[in-house]
Each structure stands twice: as structure tokens, then as C-alpha cells.
Amino acid sequence: NPFANDPLRHPAIIPSSKRPFNGEPPSDLLIEKFSTPQQLFYVRNHLPVPDIDPNNYSLEVTFEDDDEGTVEFSLKDLKKFRKSSVTATLQCAGNRRSEMNEYKTVKGLSWKQSAIGNATFTGVKLRDVLMFVGFKESDPSYKGKHVQFEGLDIDPFTSEQYGASIPLVKALDPEGDVLLAWEMNGEPLTRDHGFPVRVVVPGFVGARNVKWLGRITISDEESQSHWQQNDYKGFSPEVTLETADYSKQAPIQEYPVQSAVCVPVNGSTISSKDEEITVKGYAWSGGGRGIFRVDVSLDGGKTWFEALLKQEKRTFNRNWAWTIWHVTLPIPKNHNGELDIVCKAVDSAYNVQPNTFHGHWNFRGVLANAWSHSQVKIE
Ligand code: MTE
Ligand code: MO
Image (cartoon, rainbow, N blue to C red; front, side, top):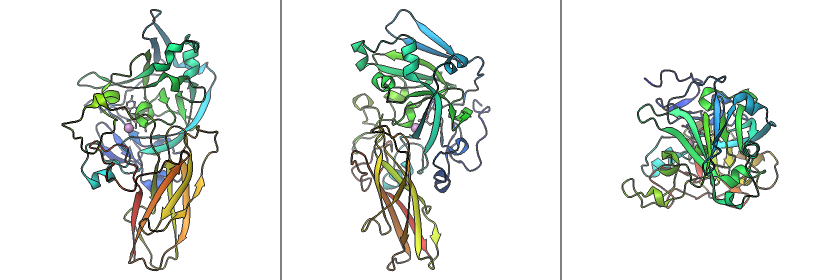
């Protein structure tokens, strides 16, 4: 059993698969704190969790078109660089897939709405490491290149390692804030979250934040790994598993605008004596776009109220962290024993979420960002 050495998980984490382990916290716990505690942070593993001795850890950095070869860094070497921190939200491309699946069946892990979390990561800027190994910013050829990341987790059957890539311009942007991180919320990374070193690509989808980082390659090509080429892509609604041509679709990198109602939990019951209800949730958008507004409805979207936002104030297009929001509203008198609570967010480019999954559905169930509903009974 290649998973026998996997770490223990917090009992509150609800698994969506056990081998490999995938799980998320209940949605009301998710938004209790602005920084998601590591133990409650969703876990998305494609392979068994590697057990890495930090004293033997080494990170290889390679320029594909340079004969000078490879530079190796131990954990100690990496910690000699100037330390940087960034507060960023990671969200799996499959977050809220179960809701898209209710609309029409999709293929993939059945995530509810907590395959997302926010944390302060500390490490070294990837930019600083690339400049150190001799990268020349004046070299015009870098604009089209990619940074490939390889994880130290290995498929026990095919020997494939997890991999992904991002455009080199993102890694080199001094305001792109891409980190090689060894701490999360001031603690060393746990094994599930990539101990000893993971990549954090703020504003990009979870899949590019490669854990257990073993190798970085600067290349003219994207990562050729399964997860960059044949997964994590959005398709038109008519495309099926049989007809999908992955080579013709772009990989998901920046994530679109997202929000969800976390409290009250979908399916819960409130008392008919209550006069008010407090609704809470999160909102986030990719690419550093902040959240301008969250609208909340108690009647399925007929009437709307603005939520109060809790967010970090950052400079333009560097809003990597999520927004936590809440609003307390009078319960309408004409409720028929039920509330259809809805939220939708507006990001700093005034992008909005689609009303429903109609016309937005895709067979892999990624990018599920339609208006979020929580149905509540009044008794
Ligand atoms: N990195 C490696 N090496 N192996 C993986 O399976 N999963 C990716 C990404 N990095 C993965 C990985 C995906 S799809 C997501 S959503 C995030 O890690 C999840 O990070 P987390 O488990 O720390 O929440
Ligand atoms: Mo993911």
C-alpha cells in the first residue's frame, strides 16, 4: 500500500477520496478565521505523500537551453536568501464541482465549496532565486518562456511525478509575489501541504502551486505533465470525455471571480422565532483582482443587499488574499418556510459570476463559479 505512510489528518476534514487523500473542512469552520489553520486547509493530493528528510532535501534549478547545467539548493541554502511573505488564497479548479454535478453529471472529485483556503506563506521569492542563478532580465527571449515545477511525489504505478508550469513573466514580476515557501501561517509546512518546500503562485489556480518541490526548469515549453496538458482545462458545454481535445484548450492559470455562502450551511434549519439572519461567506478572484462588492439575497435573487467585507488592503492587482464577508438581514415575512440564500461577488475588473451553470457547465466540472445558494428551512 503506497499510501500507508500518509500523515494523519484533522478529524474535521471531510474526505472526498482517501487514496490519494483529498479532503476539505466544513464550510462554517472554513471562514471562522481570515487565515485558514494548516490543519483545516483543504488537501488535494494526486499521489502518495512523500516523506522527505529536510537534511537531504535538494532543489534543482535548470535552464533547458544552457549547457552550464543545474544549480542545486539545500534547504539551508534557500533560507540564506532574503525572506519574503505573502498572504494568498489557494483554490482548487474543482472547488464547488458537486454543485455543477447536480446541474449535470461531471467527472472528477466531488468537492463542496471548501476546496479553498487563505494563508500567509513565507519563503524566498522565486524571482530572487532565478536572478541568483544568473537569469538576465535584459534578455528579451524570456517573455515567451515557462517555469516548470516538478514535485517529489511519484506515481507508484507509472513513476510519473506531479508537475505544472507558469509563464516566466509571472515568476520574474517583482510584483507577482511567486514564492518558494517553507512556512504557512508561521509554522513549517506540514507534509500534506508540501513539506519542506512548495511553490506559491498568488492569483493562480491551486494546481500550479506545486508541493514537495524537487526541480525547476526554465523552458520554451509548458510543463508536459498530465496535469498541465490533459487536466485543469475548461471546455465548451458540448464537449465530452470522448470528444475533448486537450491540445486545443489553454490551461487554467488565473482563476475567475468566485464566492460562496458558508453560513448558514446549506440544508440547515433556523427558528421561525428568529427575526434576523446572519449570512457569511468568502469571495476571491484570480490575477490579484480584488473584490469590490458581494451581493446577498434571501429570496433566490429577486432582491439584493450588500455584504460587509473584511479584506487586506493591497495595491492595485496585488490582492492575493480572499475576502470574508457577512451581513445581518431581517427575515422576510413572506418566506413560505424556506429561504433561498444567494451570493455573488464583483471583482475589481467588474467581472461577475454566472447566474447558473447553464451554458457554463463543462464535463470536468472545473471553474464552478455560478451564484452560490444555501437553502434554509424555517421551523
Ligand atoms: N503538488 C504536488 N506535488 N502534487 C499534487 O498532487 N496538487 C495540486 C497542488 N500542488 C498537487 C500539488 C492541486 S490540484 C492543488 S488544488 C493544490 O496543490 C492543493 O494544495 P493543498 O493540498 O496544500 O491545499
Ligand atoms: Mo486542484
